[in-house]
Every structure is written in C-alpha cells, then in structure tokens.
Length: 513
Ligand SMILES: C[S@@+](CC[C@H](N)C(=O)[O-])C[C@H]1O[C@@H](n2cnc3c(N)ncnc32)[C@H](O)[C@@H]1O
Image (tube, rainbow, N blue to C red; front, side):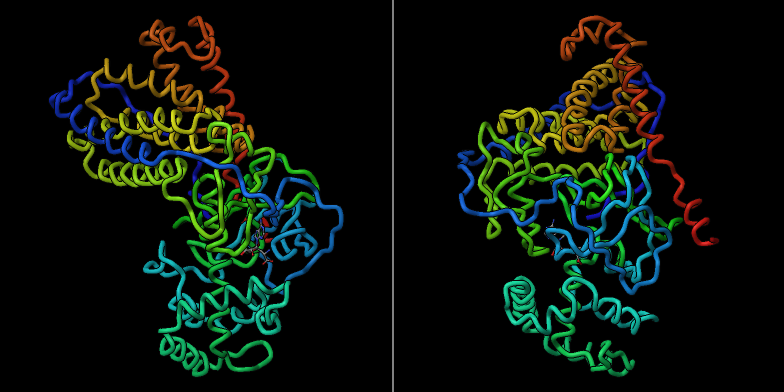
C-alpha cells in the first residue's frame, strides 16, 4: 500500500574498457539456467481462459468522476502537519461513504497531505502482519488513551461493530469480526492479557467502559483495514483504494518523519482522491482476490473501460473470484515469477553495494538481466497482448537489471553497447504501457524517460549506426533517434519539475503559521 520515496534517484557511472575475468561459458550457463527457470514458471499450465461470470456487480466504481452531492465530514482529530486542497466527505458511493475529494482542480504533483503516523511501528513490526502484538503496541503508546478514542472513528467504527448484528449495512463488518475471532480463537490468554494491561493503565472506551474482548478484535480489524507498513495514520487512512489511483503515498524516511501524499494526474474539483492498497501492479484477478482478503470489498468481475484492454489475455478477460486465485492462470504465473525475480534483484543489488568489485556478483546481475529479458518475451507470448499491465512489471524488472549491469566498472565496452541497445528496446515499450496505465504525468515515467535518454545519448555518441539495427517503431534515421533522445530528456525534466522536493518547506510554513 506504500511507495518508496525519492522517485528521482538516478545514477551515472563511467564506462570502463577492462574485460571481465569471468569465462563467457560460465556466464551463459548461469544465464541459461535462470532463463530456463523463468520459462518453466511462465509456461506451466494450459493457459485456458474463460469469460467473466455474469451477475456479479462491482461495488467499487472508483472511476475518476467528480461526485455530485457533497456532504462534508469533520473528523474529531488533530490536524496533520499539512492538509492540502482536499476535504473529507461522507457521501461517496463506496468505501463506507467516507473519503477525501479535491476541493478544486489539481495539477499532477500537488502535495495534498503530510502526516506523521500516530503510532510508528517498532522495527520488529516492520514488514510483518499486524496482529495482537500490534494492538499491544498501541496500548503501550504514551498517548494510548487518546489513540483508542480516535480509533473509534476508524472503519469499522465501534458503533458499526456493536450495533451491526448482521444487518445489510454491516454484514461485511460482522463477517470480518467472525473471521478474526475464529483466527484468534486459540489466543484467548493473549487477548485477556491485553485487556488486563489496558485496565491496569486505566485505558477506557469513549463511553468510559473497560475494553472487552470484542474491542480487542475490533482494534485488530481496524489495523487490518487501516494499518500501513510504517504505522497508523488518521488522515491517510481516509484515502480509499482505486485500481488506477490518482495519488501516491511516499514512505517516511529517517530524515523526514512524516508520510507524503501527492497527486499523480490532473484531478478535477470534487473528484475522489485515491491511492492503491496493493504494493505492486497486478492483474484484475489478483487485485480482486487480495482486496477482498485484506479489506473485504469486492471490485467486481468487471474491469473499468480504461483498464479493460490492459487486462485482456488474448481476447478474453480472465476469470476472477473473491474466493480463490487460480495459481495456474497465466497472469498468476507471471506475477509469481516477477515477484521472485524482483526479490533476487533486490538481494543482488544490495550485495553489490557492499562488494562493488566482486566479479561473481556482477555475473549474477548479467544473468538476471538475461533472464528478465527472457521473461519479457515469454510474458508477451503468453499474454498475447502488448498493452497488458503485467508487462509494466516485467519490462521494469529488465530495465532495472540493465541499470544495475551498467554500473559494473569492468563491463567491456562491446558488452556495454549491446546492453544499452537492449535497454532502449525495453524502455521504449515500457513508456507506452506506463503512460497508458498511469497517465503521462506519473513520476515513474520520469525515470524511464531518463534511462532512455541516457542510453540513447551514449549510443549516439559511441556507435549511432547500431541504433538503425533496432528498428524501433519506424524510427529509420539517426536523426529520428536523436529527436527521441531530446524528447525523452525534456519529458524527464517536465515530469521532475511537477514533483518538487518542497515537503520540508511546506511543513515548516504550516507549523509556523
Ligand atoms: C483505509 S479505509 C479507507 C477509508 C474508509 N472509507 C473509511 O471510511 O474509514 C479502508 C476501507 O475502506 C473501504 N474501501 C476503500 N476503498 C474502497 C473501494 N474502492 N471500494 C469499496 N470499499 C473501499 C474498505 O472497506 C476498506 O477496508
């Protein structure tokens, strides 16, 4: 549900002409075996798809339409570090009605929220599932009493739990409470200890009653619906999910204790502001299953017209269900392979940071680059759709691997040149799918534009004729590639200027004033 900060991290390293010591054979052996593993994973299964089931209605139409009736809601919470041009309403057609809408037309990159978590999770909690221990973290907080009162307004509110006896409005809450009760049925002692701890600290509900077992389970449910990786937020937790969100949330950093939310598209006045609750771009079937699992809302069997073409496998929309995810579906296999390879990429790039002269590590990077390239072509083959949104993940992985390999100080210049050509062949289609999915102003396009421009610049200066062999989209002259380089660099600069690093300044102003 959260994004990394610093979207404009960039690199630049000198070329080096020293030949690598590693025998070519060994490199291609590693590469072949990684490629084979990637292929196996995407190939298995018959890939037979069926049409969506009829009669399932989407409950979450989060398409970017301005809402007509606005009923404002003022939460009884302290103001965040900065609250931009948006307001809370309780008249949305989804998400229990509550959420933020734009107060006026907003440009992409507009800062809308700076907020410190009300509870920042301790290190041992980071990256872990939020459990009963997390409830205890809240109770241990120096401001625990106020927090418990504030959390009563979270989804689901205390009232929704206490009075919701399964009526149609609260059936989802009642079901989820039953699931959590069942999941924690063997943890009665832990729950009792939490209740005793609260009582010892004199922590009461707003109606001055002692916390009960139901309250502990409700708090757990609040965490499940509202808790983020880095902590608990009041205002951020009011942002609803959209499959193609118009905002992004950046994680706090050691220097910057608050989380930052910015728009990523042009947003019209009264349009709901949304983020994605999922950590990466996945297929409709995965989104539907995971959003139901975690948040108990169903995005339905249908896909928005904007996303429809990006979800087709061949000419069909794959089946989806809230109950299960088909592990053998083409999309699931590609998602699994990407996830495993991204993990490998992250590990390898971390190791390289500590051992920049280790030639074996560089060889693993080269193998990863080859296997991710192979994954792109396998995915394209299997998805039979060169606009499919999963190509974003595959192409991005290949681009990142190229970026990594480029940093090898011993990369021979001939290898560097072919690497740059492969990078260009990946960055170009990646920009097309990214733009289709995110719109033209999303910060993620900026780094792709920069990668493309830098690679084109280098090949133009080293061996411009190489570019003519690429046969990119009808680009038939060196001049045309030079024009593409110029356009990409300009786009990088344009998008970068939309996202200024001004949060600290704005935070300073709003705290002083
Ligand atoms: C972090 S809260 C968002 C704020 C919520 N609207 C509220 O009033 O507290 C997350 C919950 O909002 C609801 N929600 C968010 N986005 C939704 C969407 N697109 N469709 C349906 N429900 C949504 C789900 O119940 C989810 O568990």
